[in-house]
Length: 252
Image 1 (spheres, one colour):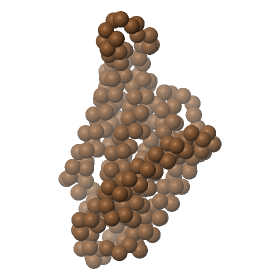
Image 2 (image 1 turned 180 degrees about the vertical axis):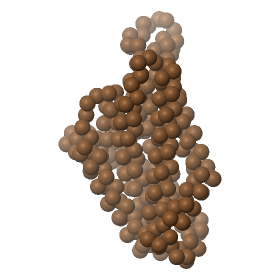
Image 3 (image 1 turned 45 degrees about the horizontal axis):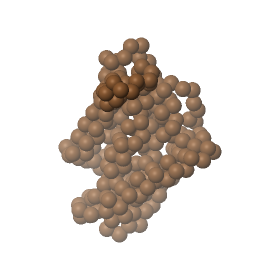
């Protein structure tokens, strides 16, 4: 893997200096702060919308509602942002024509792909950590008796799902000519997981069940994610190997 570390430093520097890191950090931090506020005042908002004509019968919110709201956004909108980031990792450089020069230096194609994957993975890991810290801070202020363990377990399970989607989308980014097309494949993979999750065995023994497991962990419920995490890790490794194989054969 000639040139992996220099390429990784370059990728991390570009992420820090461009819009990508701000998109991640602002989005994750914003939802991390806003979701506990939404959970805390949902009852009042609904009462205001009803105008006092219809009694609001939902129970008073707890900190678990804040965790559930945060992880719901993690598994939906914020995961889409992760897919967008991964879609442009390789396809963006190919379409812009900036890839030829780095690969003429002592940089192997394998190292190039792995550096891209590592940089995106580290950025997303940092973003979810910052967002979860923000959610913890806001929830601690708004609710009493907060237990932080459930939300961190849920965030860890979500990160496994996010890394799988990064690996899958990177395969598409190595194969297809544009970031938009790669995003379509990555987002399509997420939709397929959602559909497959309707089948109980797949939900229990494959990554298709991870979105539900994230929500269950956030609510403090006992659930086993061993098979889901193991199969997700195996699929992610397969996607990494596929991305390397595809890119090594791609004409630039």
